[in-house]
Length: 394
Ligand SMILES: Cc1ncc(COP(=O)(O)O)c(C=O)c1O
Image (cartoon, rainbow, N blue to C red; front, side, top):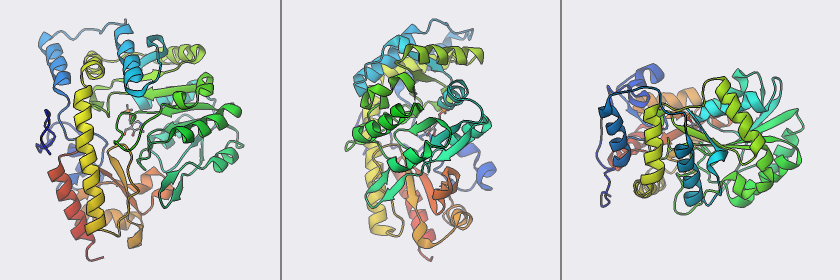
C-alpha cells in the first residue's frame, strides 16, 4: 500500500460537499451515522492532471458556451479505445453526451418503438429497468445463470427471450453488479445471436477500464464485428477516473447510419454537448492519466484481494464470486436466510454501513447486497469488520 506516485490511502471525509454517497445517507437509508459503501463513485481524489485542467478553467473565470467543435475530444476518446482496448475507432465514429444513462435513454427512443420488448440480463444496474419502462418499452428479462465458478449468460434463454416481440438488448459489459468481465467468446456468442435475429444492441461499457490483472475487457464490437451495423456502444471516463459529477460521456458507432441517427437524436434533445469542465476533464483523463489509472487499478485489486480473503477467513457464510472487474461487489448473504428488508436492517442498523439493497437489481437480488470497494483500504477494513460483528450472532 502507498508505495506509488499517487495517494489512495488517505481517508477523506466527503460530508458536506454536496455528494450523493455521503450527504444523502439519511434520505436513502434513514440515518446518517453510517459509513457509505453504496453509490458507484470512489472516495479518492481524481488524477492530479484532471484537477489541474479544472483549476485552469476555474481560474480563467469566464464560463461561456463551450466550443461546439468537438473533434479534439472525439479524437481523445477514439485514441483511448485504440490504445487501451485495441479497438480501431475513428473520431467521426464518436459523439459526446452528458451521461451514459442519457445515451441509453435516447438510444432506446431512437432505435426502438413504443411497445417493443428490450432484453436485459438480470441482476443488473437499476436504471436499465427504469429507462426501458419510462420510455414505454417493456422489459424482457434473461437472467444470468449462477454457476459455482461465477455468473454466465444464458444463451438458450436469450434465444427464447428474443421470441417476445423484442427489438433490442442492453448489455452491461463489464457487468454491474456481478463483476463479470465477459470473455471474447461469450461476447461473440451473444453478438452472433443478436445479429442473426436482427436485434439492436446497446452495449454499456462504462466499466471497461476497471478490470483486474486476471481478466481482459473486449469491446463487443471487437468480439463480434458482424454486429456493427446494429450496435451502439456507450463509454465514459467517469467511473474510470472518478469524475461522474462532471457529466462527460461518449457513444461510439462504427456504422455511419447509426452514428448519424444517434447524433441527430441527441441534438433534437439538446443533449449532444458536454459542459466545459467535463470537456477539460475528459481530455486530460484520456490523454494524460493512464499512469494514474494503472495505479488505481493496482490499489483496487488489493482491495478485491482483501475482501476475498476477509470473507474466506472471517465471514465464510457470505459468498462472493471472484470479481474480475468493477469496484462494486455482489455479496451473497443468502446463507443467513434473511429476506431483503431484514437483511438491509442488519446491514444498516447493526453493522451501520450503507450498501445497496440487492433487490433493486432485480428479483434475483433478494438476499444480496452490493459493496463499493472504491475507498482507502483502512475504511474497507472497518466496513468488513462491522459487517462481521453484526452477523456474528445470526
Ligand atoms: C452500468 C452502468 N451504466 C451507467 C452508469 C451511470 O452512468 P452515468 O452517470 O454516466 O449516467 C453506471 C453507474 O453506476 C453503471 O454502473
